[in-house]
Amino acid sequence: MNKEVSKYKNNVIASKKKHIYSRLMDYFSLFVVTYLLFTIFYSIGARLPVVNSISTELKNKSGEVAEYIDSTHLQRLNEDHSSLLSIDEGAKQYVLNVCKTSAYIHDLTFPIKNSEGIYEEKTINENETFAYNASEYNLDTLSYYFKKFKKEDSSLNTYIYQEVDYKDDIDTYLYLKIMNLDETKYVSSDDSNLLAKGNGISRFTVLNLEETNNLLRYYKEDRIDTSTYDRVFLSFISACKYGIKEVENKSSTYLNLLSSYQNTYQSLTLSIFIIYLISYVVSYLLLLFIMRLVSKEWITLGQKVMGLAMSDYEEMEPGPLNIVIYNVINFILFISSLSIAFYFTGMLGIFTLTIVPGLTLFTLFVPLLILNLISLFMPLFTKNHHNLSTLLSRLIVKDTKDFDGPVDIIESEEDGREKTEDRSNI
Image 1 (cartoon, rainbow, N blue to C red):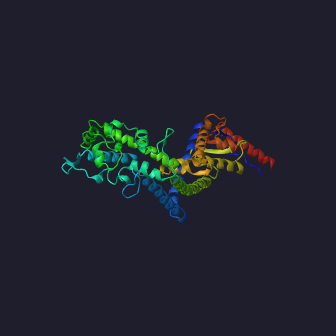
Image 2: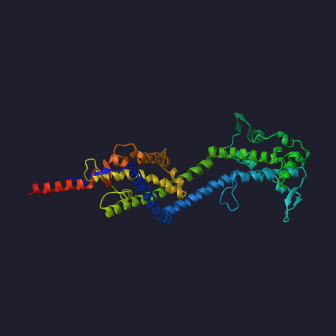
Image 3: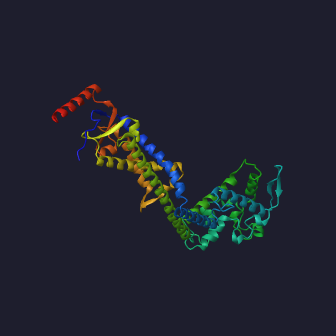
């Protein structure tokens, strides 16, 4: 099939700036159209039974993971079981419980602010302290995990710290090694009040009298010295993080639940990615054929706006193969706009989608973004102002408004050629 001479044969190669501007316009116009279609397609797709069932299953799996974490007592669920409380919230509650337990053991009262904003001293009941039902550790979340939960789970039942086994001395393991407590800040093991009212709780959960009074002042909003509060707070954070890390790395139950959750999550991210891919394909073809109908040429929106057109290396009209290669490369490069779309929709988790084992969408798109940037700025340092798409498709982008020589000379040359051709046909 013979090609026709390009009508832009005598037009100059488009400037570097026009190349880059048209490229940016193509990239972001495609992103906008895709984003709009995606919001429509996603609202429809999310209601499809197959996607809806995956979403429901994922919610259930997430609930199972949260319930298991709650069962360790290292992090607790909120009242309506909709989410886990932060570690800081757990630390605040732990310090309060330590304060009440210590005050209870020392026969001290606890300050409570009344409706008028005045603090009143209140007697502490045993059920507000660690001493209540002590063997079950109802209020002592750290002891519950390290002395009960951990011991009853075969995958967690180890008390080795720095190559020393503390299985028979869990208090040392927890309070002195993990929490790094200062023994002098707590009552002695033979303290008479501890023995009389403690119901066997660890001495490391009861501050000495001086520290207890210092902590009580904190709850009276006397914050001149917060050292006791800070020390107990941070020691809880340290132990809690240690326990959480242990659960995440060793608990067979947690790892199985997490694996099941991740498999379901992968299914959901795949369905979302497919919806976006459909939106992208439709958008790309829509813009491609609309521009074909409008301009009667295979050019992009950015090229149309910037007054550009294309010819091949021999100054002939681009052939079908050139056009196909050009658009396939553009299609691959421009799909990197997916990252912008999922940023705005808050769906960045889509990048954890595993394409093949060891290759996620994120690891695929990072080099694609880099390649896209290289292609964008290639006109600045290539001879014919090529980007990656025009280079591989062997096309040259011409400026339809600028010529190699004066327009009247070019037109007269073309007229002369036409007349010569006419005579040769006689």
